[in-house]
Image 1 (cartoon, helix red, strand yellow):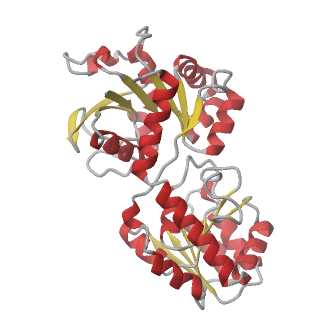
Image 2 (cartoon, helix red, strand yellow):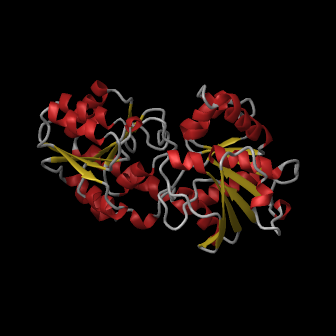
Image 3 (cartoon, helix red, strand yellow):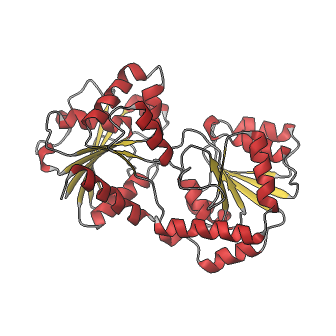
Length: 381
C-alpha cells in the first residue's frame, strides 16, 4: 500500500519534534508499505514554537521521502506548485494527516478526489483550534471540513476521542484511538522490576520530565510535596523552559532547596538512566496529546501519576497500572502519601501490570493496529 502522511510534526535530521509519528511511518515502511511524507511548515507558527526552519526541498530518511514545504499561511498558496512535477495524489492508496496544518493541507491536496481514503488524526492542538475563539472562526472551520471529508478519524488518546466526539457531528461513528507505544528494547527486564518492588528508596526518589511551560503544572507538584506528610524524599525535575525561574523562586520561598533538584535539559538516554533510580514519576499537565514520558517512566519501574481525563489517561488506569489525579495540590499531596505508604506487594502488582501493558502495546503493535483499524473503516484491502 502507498501511504501519504501529511504533518508538520515529522522530525527532519533528528529535529526537536516528537518521534512518535516518525515511528508510525518507520513501522509501516518496515511492514512492506511505501510511506511518503509532506511536511507543511508554516513559518510564522514554526517561529512562535521556536523550532528550526529547514530549507524547502526533498529529504530522505529511513527510505522515506519527506517533502518539506515552507509557506507563510496554510491557506493562500497552491500546494501542487510546491511539490515535484511528477507528484500525483492519485498514486496513493491512503492519505493520513496529523495536526491542524496537516489536515488543512491534506484536504486541499485531495480536493475532490473522493476515491482516495483519508484519515484525519486528532491531537490536543486540534481541540484547541476548534475551541479557542482566536482560531475557531477560520482554522476551526477548516478542521470541521476535514473531519467531514475523512473516512476515519484517529484520536491520539482516549480523552481526545471523547472530546472530538462531543465537538464534531461527524466523529461519533468513525473515530478510533491510535495511541503511542514504545520500543520493547527500553523496557527493563523482569528481574529489575522485582528488585524495585522489593525495596523503597530512602530517600524516596520522585521525578518529572517535561518542558517547563505553564500547562505542565510542575508548580502543582512542588506545592503538593510541600503539603504532603512525606519528608524523606528527593524531587528531580528534568527539563528546561520559561517557567524555570518561577519554579526556582517557588522552591526557595517554600524552603525546599535541599529536596528539589533542577536537572535542566538532558538527553533522553540520560533521562532514562535517571528514571531507573526513581520510585515515582509525576506529571499532571493539561492539554497533552498522549505523553511518551509516562511510558518511559513506566519502562523503568516507576509508579506513574498522570492527569485525570487527559493525555495518557485511559492507558494509565487508577490503582491498576498507575494512578490518575486532577491537577490539584491537595488531591495530589494525599495521593503521594498513599503511594509512599503502600505495601511493597501492591507496588509490585502495579508496576508489573504496567510493564505487561507496555510490552503488549509496543510501537510496532500499535502501528499495525492503526492500519488495521483504518482498513476496517475504509474498506481498503
